[in-house]
Amino acid sequence: MTSPENTGLLRPPALRAGDRVAVTAASGAPRTEDLEKGVAALESLGLIVDVLPSARAAGVPLDYLAGDDATRAADLATALTDPRYRAVFMARGGYGAQRTLEGVDFASLGAPAPRVLVGYSDVTALIEAVSVHLGWVSLFGPMPVSDDFTPGSYAFDSLARTLFTPAEATRLTFPAARTLVGGTAEGVTLGGTASLLCSSLATSTSRPASGGILFLEDVDEEPYRLDRILTQLRRSGYLDGVAGILCGTFTGCGDPAEIDALLIDRLGDLGAPVLAGADIGHGVPMQTFPVGVPARLDADGGTLTFDGPVLT
Image 1: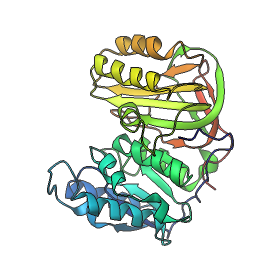
Image 2: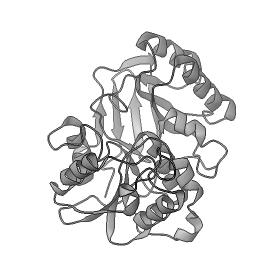
Image 3: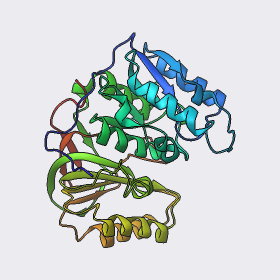
């Protein structure tokens, strides 16, 4: 495993009207009507959208997957390497990204031109893999089948601003966040959905948090299961040397006060500032979180400031 570099990862180009992008599925199968709504939203930005076969595949052979593993893996490889594509939007989360990664030979992909990968939840595994093997900045953000993937919504506009005018998206503010451990920290951003980070431990796509600003969120995990996830991240050494921790939503994980107490218990002794309650993740209109960019976390002021535009 490699640690985040102080200089961050390769920043893909910002998008412009007329760019061609891919929509693919590495996890669950999207509903047709939701997918079409998301494609229309992307087209409203002036993008040319190619929907790859996996995004239209039924749940066969397993109803919780978008087609078979080989189709999803082949589509992901195409989306990451085809020079026509300037961005890759994962259609939805769910489950299946780990199985998809099992079928991708990153060594055979060569060194394709960077393009931005967008998604969250199960897509955490792909964002980690792209970081480790291709060295690209990615965006932990809403997906085409998300309820709020609609022009004019808070989440969609946050994503569009980051993609098209990254110079206007160099700072995230969290006025409703809670300081669990005060202080400031600098490092390269990483992380995502905690259970997915845990699932990638001991694989070739895991990227440990040493020296980084780690983002954590999750959904529908009982407190004891979340405890188990955080404890495994601790015991594995994943959290060793983390510079700062930003926590987003823990929707459906129990009483917020109980979750804060758990976060303090499992993260508060790491010697890093911890800010909780950021509007990133499941269950809220979310801000887009860039992964792989040097940033400064101010846990007392409730801000995360990047070293410049997160895309070129």
